[in-house]
Amino acid sequence: MTWFSHLSLARRFSLLSFFLIFGAMFMVGAWTGYQIKTGVINRTADLTALYVDSLISHHLQEAMRPGAAGTDHAREVNDLLGDSPLGRSLAAYKIWSPDGRVRYSSEPAIVGRQYPIEGGLAEALSGSIRAEISELKQPEEFYESQVWSQLIETYAPLRSPETGEIIGALEFYQTTDTLFAQIRAAQIRSWLGLGASAAVIFLLLARLIYRASGTISTQQFELEEKVSQLTGLLVQNEQLHNRVSRAAVRTTALNERFLSRISADLHDGPGQDLALALLRIDELAEICESCRIAKREQGSAGEDFRTIRTALKSALTDLRALLSGLRLPEIEYLSLGQTAEHAVRDFERKTSATVAYSRGNLPDEAPLAVRITLYRILQEALSNGFRHANGIDQRVSIDTCEGVLIAEIADQGNGFDKRAIEAEHLGLAVMRERVEILGGFFEVESEPGHGTVVRTRLPLELTEEGGD
Image (cartoon, rainbow, N blue to C red):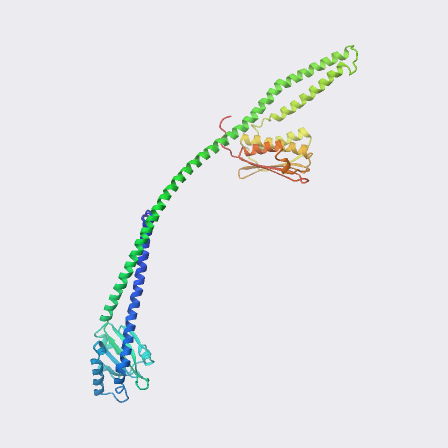
């Protein structure tokens, strides 16, 4: 059927509809022929019964009386049937008595013989008319079968004109030539009518389908063009998405390097200057303490130097704290698990808090951008929990599932209303941005009085970073 699948839709439909329509025409024609055949036979039977009832029955009444059989009566019956319009179309006949005995027949050899009452004979003796095409296989049809292969066999009841009582049955045979000629003529007329109707229906359907097929082909061509254009756009979008992903990964690493450079610059520049100024202030304060300078109303010069020293020391402490936050530890050579544990332990060291840390089966290798983002998320979420929840029951859980890193940071603090806080909280916004720029998922669950849970999911396979 490969050739069929290569045909156009219109041709496939035309071929199928041709077989369906003309197959249906053949079945309808066969059924019509059968109905014509049955109708002709029944019509023949009805006409015969009417003829027998109106013209022959009263002539056969005397011949059917008990003891009336004889040569004279037989000749009279033969003349009656032979000279009548019905008789001239007969091939053979039999007249049966109610007991199944042949009273008269066109074949004298079977006269007087008795046969079982069954089939058409039984129906005729019960008052019905029976007509069919006989294959002449019954015992009483032996002589007819020597001449013909089949005949139209008709049984009709014989009634008494006076009482209406059934006094016998008339069986006669007619040749099928005339019948078959009528049937063939009627079938030819029906076949021609059906064929013409089927051809008109087929042509109308074919014209309709070919027009529809043209419209469908045009629309299909336009659709294929649009699909081709959309496919090209999808490819371009995929390429742009990959470029954006690569840029996001590179940006994460570059941002950390930029922050590290700022930290180094602040440490080597303003940090060193503040430290030097602090040392010189200490020396000047000692010199001024040993000098005999009159005391002023607002205090001595040594006290002023100590105030300046305290302010500089506080500024230097704050600067060092900022520098420690800007600069990442050397995590480039750490595994994913080591990076997470380093962030947790560093938080514990700085705050003297205790964090319940658990980890699942983590891979040894992970993109640097993922490790940097994980470190920053843990750092910010733990710091928020320490500042806003007093570090109550802080927990960190790290695991992986189907190529995705899952991190959960929770506490049992007072919680907060997300709708009032999240949009204004810079730390939450930065964490969300860090996660989503890598194609991850970030969410915060919190209610007043029910603690806070920060969840993040990061893909462990990122587009090639391309460049350092």
